[in-house]
Image 1 (cartoon, rainbow, N blue to C red):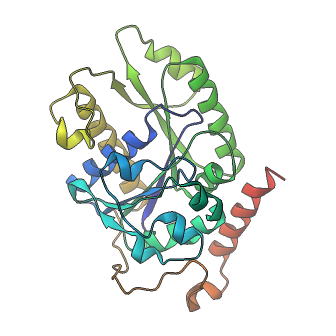
Image 2: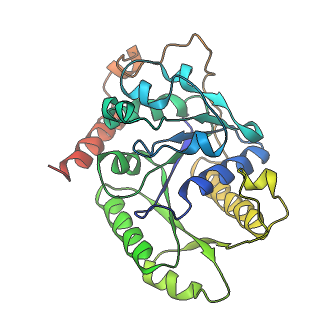
Length: 280
C-alpha cells in the first residue's frame, strides 16, 4: 500500500505554505511517521533555503530527466526527508511539471506521508500537485486577496477531483474574525496559527521555538492531519521499499509494474490530462 499524499496549497504567495509544510512534517515525524517534503514551488523554490539545506541534484534536475529521485533526497531537521528544488532560472526552464507524478508515486512507495509544498498562482506547476494529492490543505491569511485566491484554488481542486480536507488561517491576531474567514472560504478551518512575535524566524519553528503559540498551533494541525491520514488508510500504511543511494527511480523510465495498465493508473493518467486541459 502506498503512502498518503498531502498537497499544501493556496493561491497567494507569502501566506505561509512552506512554513506550514515544514512544521507539519516535523510534527508528524515526531509522532512516529516517516515523512518526506517535496519542494514543488518550481519558480521560487525556498524550502532548502529555509531549512539551510543545500543539496544536488535537486528536484528540478529530476524533473529535467537528469537525475533519479533517490539521488535528490536529503535528511533535514527533525529527521524529515527533504527533496529540495533550486532557484536558478535555467533549472526552472528545464523542469517538466508533468514528471512530478512519477516522482510523487516513487516517494509514496517509500514514505508513509508525502507533503508537497506548492507555489503561488494557478499554473501547470501549481495545479499538477492538486491532482496528485489524497488530501489538499489550503493555507491563507485573513487578507481579502488571499481569501479570494484560496477560494479559486479550492474551486480548481474540485474541478480535477481533488479532495480539500480544510484550511489553515495564518498570521491571525486579536482583530482577526476567524468565523468570518471560515464562512467566506466555506470549508472547515483545521487550524489558526497566530502572529507570534516571540516565535523565532528560524525553521522549523517546532524545533527552534517549541514553546511558542504558533508552534503549538502547528502541532495541533499535524494531529488533525494524522487523524485524517489514519482514517483514510485504515490506521496507517507501511512503506514498500526504502530508497538507497544507488536506487534507480528515473522519471523517464517505467518499471514493469508501471507498464502494466490498471484501472487505478488509468485514472491517474486521466487526472493529469484533465489538469493540463484546463490551460489549453
